[in-house]
Amino acid sequence: MDKIVIEGGVPLKGTVEVSGAKNAALPIIAATLLTDEKCVIKNVPMLRDVATMLKILRGLGVKAQMEENRVVVEPLRYKQCTADYKLVSTMRASICVLGPLLAKQKLARVSMPGGCIIGQRPVDLHIKGLQALGARIKIEHGYIVAAAKQLRGGNVFLGGAYGSSVLATSNVMMAAVLARGRTIIENAACEPEMVDLANFLIKMGAKIKGQGTPLIEVEGVKYLHGAVHSVIPDRIEAGTYVLAAAITDGDLIIERARIEHLSALIDKLQQVGISIKAQKGAGIHVKRRARLLKPVDITTLPYPGFPTDMQAQMMALAAVSDGISVITEKIFPDRFMHVSELNRMGANIFLEGASAIVKGVKRLSGAPVMASDLRASAALVLAGLVAKGKTEVSRIYHLDRGYEKLEQKLEKVGAKIKRVKE
Image 1 (cartoon, rainbow, N blue to C red):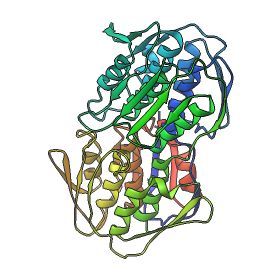
Image 2 (image 1 turned 180 degrees about the vertical axis):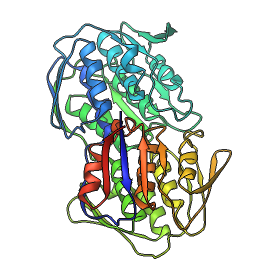
Image 3 (image 1 turned 120 degrees about the vertical axis):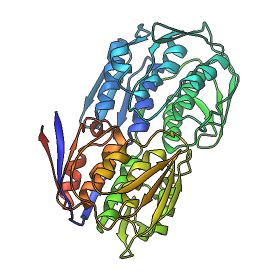
Image 4 (image 1 turned 45 degrees about the vertical axis):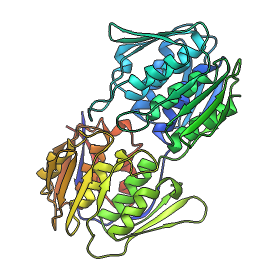
């Protein structure tokens, strides 16, 4: 098993490039199950989660290959309809095959999903949405079993206890494209990754309107054809590099980052004392403008609100700010497993319900820490970059699920970071 070792205290300077968005690539790869024709997906990050999704497709009888950052999928009239527990249980996003399988094969058996342990993430909205299209669904032996001779368009409301659901919206939209008639999805997720999926489906021949808004309209078609598509840049990876520059008092150009996807993060960082400017073409320039970082209050919300996937990384920055910050988690209220590890490094953080009270300290100190989930891993790396001495981050297989060559990219801009065998 690998770990990452960091010698902190080095300001990052130079240029770092953002990879394709994991959270867009996974449902787009799943969407290829809707056609019998070849699809080519470009700018796909080489990640463990992507490899898992390709294994799930192969288990369904699909020919799916990846070379560098390019995925080629050829369904070749596959007939399998069961997504196996051993793979689905490792990754939450694998539930995205449920809608396409049901729409194309009329039957889907998908294991209850797994992934990072960041709190309860029920599948009720997925089931509710597909039932509204006429699916018969039951849970048996740990599998979601859905069947329908012919899906029919309907009105679907996807409001949940913690707001809209990206994966539920993805599943319903993918099922609706082959349903008979019109489907209206209300309280749909508005994330850029959702727009990217819709744009891919449109290239395949789907009729979709309203992507990127809370109201999506889908007019079903009889069949979809193959398509070529390039995945959008990863806004969470970009945001992590923005915070890497901020926390180390660095000066970074982040290539391919789309500033319009980072509005909520940028708004908070400007309050903290960070300068963020758009570059000509695609990219942003990040530099600290204040000697001492100001505290900030944050509440995570569905897009375009502050992303829950940036909460842990922002906490690492708040830990070395001058004052008291309050970070409230409204998407996954239990997503605070990184707090104890940051405190091991000298942070002063305590929990009060769904909020973390962060009292900034002058300096963090390197320590052995353990990653609990994907974004917590990134937060610990950020803390290690600014801490005095050596930090060792264990269980970085979480990190490999969502960041392509993170330590290599950081090393190129000056970080003293390496991956070693434990």
